[in-house]
Length: 223
Ligand code: DC
Image 1: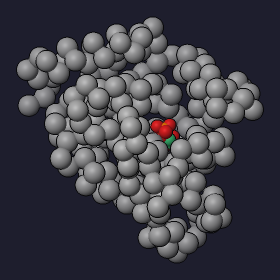
Image 2: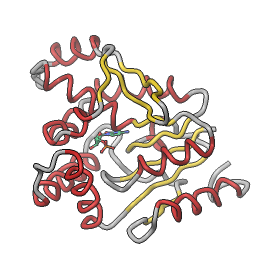
Image 3: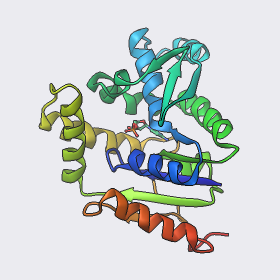
Image 4: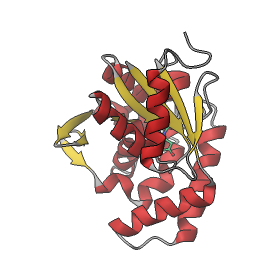
């Protein structure tokens, strides 16, 4: 079974996808982490994203895989685990530009299709539209932008405490814009996805809504 969970940044997709994967005993694949890992690598190696050869060569050097560590799914890039690095403001500020590069998307989408082929709960921006357009279930999470910014701000404060709320608001607005207007696989709701506005919903309430759909025979508009 493949479950696609798409939506804007900081809509709580990963919390929901992770919990759902545990309940359903399916692998959880965080595709945002993959784009963040590519961004981290590009920044570390000072790749000029306007130079096609540099981008191509760098992509050929990147090997990504998820490794289970307890209940966490840790992303390894060329043999090194990446956790905190992926959530830094430097990476967040560049990730949308880098994930809009067609070569980056082609490589990530192919990898995601291989990783999820045996079944997965996968979260991202284009899972239901591009990566797995025939996913068994598709959900699209939305939330009020203020609430999203507060959630991300609190998460960052717990980790490093150096980011301002305004910086988070600006970063989210910037990423929303680039993610939804880029030429290749822009962020949009698949026609057959179920939209869930979680502004006022707890994690458990969202899971209950999703499980109700999974327990029904099929989603509206789906085979
Ligand atoms: O889910 P996230 O905030 O960690 O994602 C980081 C960025 O990666 C997001 O701003 C856009 C990009 N992304 C994407 O283009 N396609 C995906 N399937 C997942 C993420």
